[in-house]
Length: 597
Image (cartoon, one colour):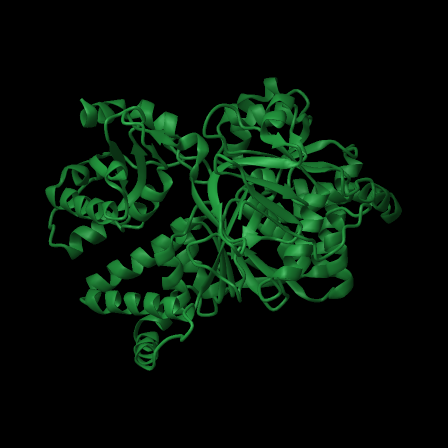
């Protein structure tokens, strides 16, 4: 199969905009608890739909009173928190356009986004954000107002809004229609300046309505979710809007490192995460079991979970003996793992990169259904996702209603539908290059099976062509290697070279645990760990294990362990954790030379 279209389940209303999603929720259940906010002592207090709506209205009135006009752009730079969604909806109620900025963005990136989008105002979170903005304020003359979330600015906006009537607010709220611009979301940019994706209100309204209709098990008001991914990323942003529409109670966490601590207090039923989070959960559990002398039991339990999940997809189902083993390990291992995630988690959505078949089966085997999804900023997040009652683990699912998929002659994935952007902001050349008629060229390589399930096999621009002429996609090699507890990031290289190799960075959180479990008595720095023979032997074993999955031309023949961590802060990852390959190749040219010299 080379193309597949799924018709809409819910009809489009050309007069609606994203604010109608909140209004529908208010009219349906005003007293339903739509959010939970964390107190300083770690406890949670609930916020009703009606209270959230009143706060949004008050803030929107404040924006109008401060001179914000329909169609103007307002930027938001903040960690993930309750106010992010409040500001987002308030901007839409004021008829304006929201522009998210990663709170980790450099001053140069901030200047580019603010100036390119013509933003007239900016919401920030703290003094650090203000300092970075002030560095480039001369280059952003349109930004006349800056409001800080952690200050009296909100109170001032509420007070100013007292002069704006409900009737005036309703006029601005209705100013935008489905076809109009709702937000400009800038790609995280692995090379060059990020491009602004023009997402319309239709991208949110129709997308949310149809996704909720297609996934009723997940998108309902009995669920509650802890969101800790950056709200500036389209995946967390879209899911947040979907939660408002569906009535999913949401808690926010600005520091992803605190997830393990907060999950038991919030007790979510539904999670949104990238594959690295699921890898860390698995690796952490395995190393913890090793430290307690129960490593063998954990590995047996993991294999049983995987076998049990795979058997669920067979015609006969799990055997009686497998059910017994699974039940035993559920009491000994799986229940403890679920408790560490809060005890109530039943569903999760994973996006941003392939999860991998083994991890997908493992988590389903322990009682967590992970729905893999695929999409881009240009498609307002998920265009494809698995279904609760129809999964093919290892594939990223089927097109959502209102979405079409096509596999081009060269294997590239093309997408079209209700969620696709209308173009790149002020970049007609890039827009023309990105579209073939109404089909958006994703830049990813994939395959469709007979049921319309999509498999991602690589990134078109990242394909490596070896000196021998072999085309090699790095991602399928990198993903299974990155699942090893010691490995943080993997960059497979070999373009125009005689063989494939890899640059590998270690996970600094896992190094001390692994060394303790494996009899290495020294306390190693990351640089020392990179040279330690025991660690190098372990990485070699991991490479050997992955190599058997690939042809000889695709196998990693050599590797170098880097003495630093590859992170967003180091400049080697985007905020969505994608590798900036040109930067890595430049900064570690000596390591590449060592491999091929």
